[in-house]
Amino acid sequence: MAVLPCGVHFSSYKQAKAFIHTPAQWASLILFLVFLLILPHIFPARLVSAASIMAIVLVVVLGLQITTGLSGQINLGQSAFMGMGAFATGALAINFHLPFWLSIPGGGVAAALLGIVFGMPALRVKGFYLALTTIAAQVLFPLLIIRLPSSWFGGATGLGLEPAKIFDISIETRTGLYYFVLVGAVIMTFFAFNLTRSRTGRALVALRDNDIVAEILGVNLFLYKCLAFAIGAMFAGVAGGMWAYHLRFVMVDQFTLWNSIWYVGMVIIGGTGSILGAILGTVAIQGLEELLVALGPWLSATFPTVGGTAWFTGLNIVLGGLIILFLIFEPKGLAHRWNVLKHSFRIWPYPYV
Image 1 (tube, rainbow, N blue to C red):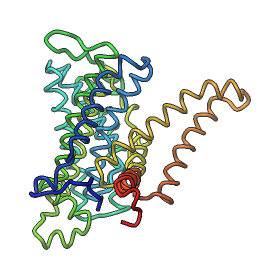
Image 2: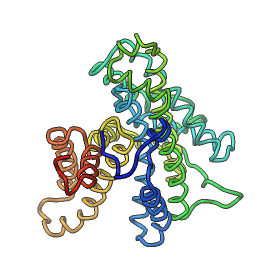
Image 3: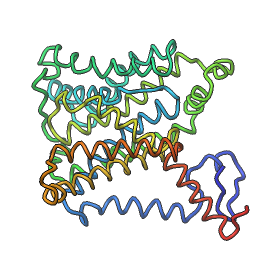
Image 4: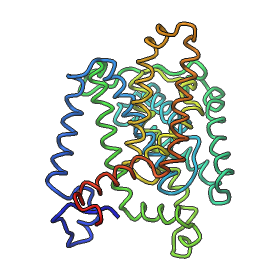
């Protein structure tokens, strides 16, 4: 259990379950939100685009954290659920002319329904076999999109979307798209944090710790396992909708098994079972990937005999090696290391406390 700041104590359960306890913590949160608001005005365009993609990926990883980290259900098909949300959002916007504030939630609902379908086997299978079941979602998703009538989801050619609009104002600029996805990411992050301290969140944690004991205590295993997949897929679907409006073009090649594996890697590096871990893992992996991509031209110019393909392979090796190192030396992830750092700061200079 983390040590509280000096002078902070609780007199109610509501205070104990709060995430922010002191004025200093509130001030830090407000300053961080202000920083996010002014980010497009102080950083170059490339970093603004990278921040937008990071915000979308964060929503996907938050959903995976709920399914895998919070409830213990292995999911290797999160990218497929994201793709389902993207195509459903595009279909609703194109075929039914729905605004983005209706088409994106619609994409989330479509992804949640797909998540329930592949979450049903979780009642009978666990571990490796459940992972294979979710991989099936990743394999079947592109076949489903391509084989369905092209008037539904565009088939193999994909879907092209009109820009999102607010009061007839199109969101097309880099800065506008950044604020668009930022608002969605903040809303979904707020929802994820509050889910962990709700009745449903406690049931999911009990399911993860010991499903047999959870069932004895009255937790409906079938209901909550399906709910874990539905909520996680809904997050991915909403992220897919934001992705569709951000790129304004959706194809099945954008949602691969490789992406699903990297989402799992972000959960591992950040720390399973922690919403903060999902945030830290996403920022760490996406930031490192952006750094390595930015260094790519310089490295290629410095070592021309290696070639660009080798650098791309090296990028995957570095990121994969990072996941292995965390599994060996820091299995609880960055969230645990952050808690240790806070604990050390609060008891300093009395390390024996």
